[in-house]
Image 1: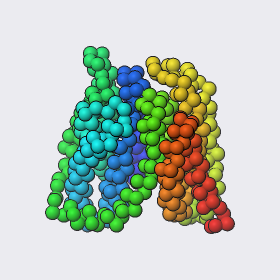
Image 2: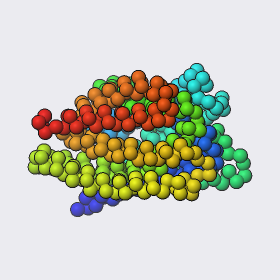
Image 3: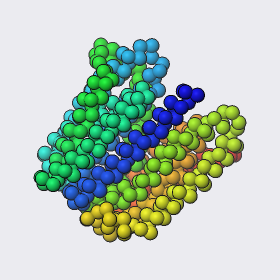
Image 4: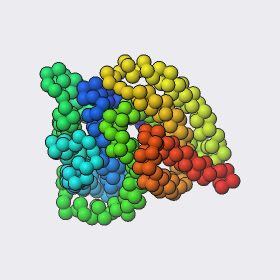
Length: 410
């Protein structure tokens, strides 16, 4: 009973932490649009895209192997130290890649990218990756209270500082990057003192070799997943400009509050569905997921309809500077997120049935669609082409998953 209570407490704390991170990112977007303006906010969104790509690689190279292989280690302490060393190497490489990549390619593609901003992003990138590693180590050790502490410092601290400093100085995008880096770095220093991770260089390479068979396909998947999820937005930002991307990203942030519902579902449904499949049968598992889908559909639809109806009032309340494109994007993202919700439920069913190969295949297909169609669609149709591409990706994924889950194939 005590163990169950502790587990439930950890789950609740994890959801609270996710709410803090998601809520802080949402609040930060409001602050940045009002402080920087749409053009600089669009640039801010665009320069975060390569950082998020590196985070997806970090998941494949470090985080997922750590979560899956940690308990199998005879010497867990040394394994954690080795992963710490690998993270240091990855962070340093990320800084080098970001610096030279933005210098060589970014200046020609991204409007408003300055040398100072490139340096700032090259500093932020390794710090943020290291911060994400520390968070995951705390989760691994079920020390969720410490995750809450460092997230409050990193996210809320940065937002408060930007608001306060804006009263005394002219806050620029470069200063926002340095403020964020500072608070992530402070959180890392406090966290490292708590978990006291060391370095064992002599065994790091052997740990890398041990992890590589597990990681290699995850790395491919990370590439594909990033292209599927972000390539249309990145291409749209480059072609349509920072203001258009900022306007679209405002709408995505508003509709993105749905992620709270998705996270709750993804924390509950897979475990319950798996238990039903193991202890009963597949038919009852399917019935459970269908029932959960229709029950969850009610709050999802209510939220989306409310956002569509009150979109003008919400935008006027939260943002000083917004365009008509933001209003239109809220309507389109609301419809798109309904498809994402369907996709989320289908993925849970597929993972429960251990047919995960089809998810990888769907990423290959949708990444190909993104690479081939993003530029011509956006060049021809503008923002409408960007949304058409994102809709197409979700519809193709849904059709693939539905075909895979046909009862006749069970």
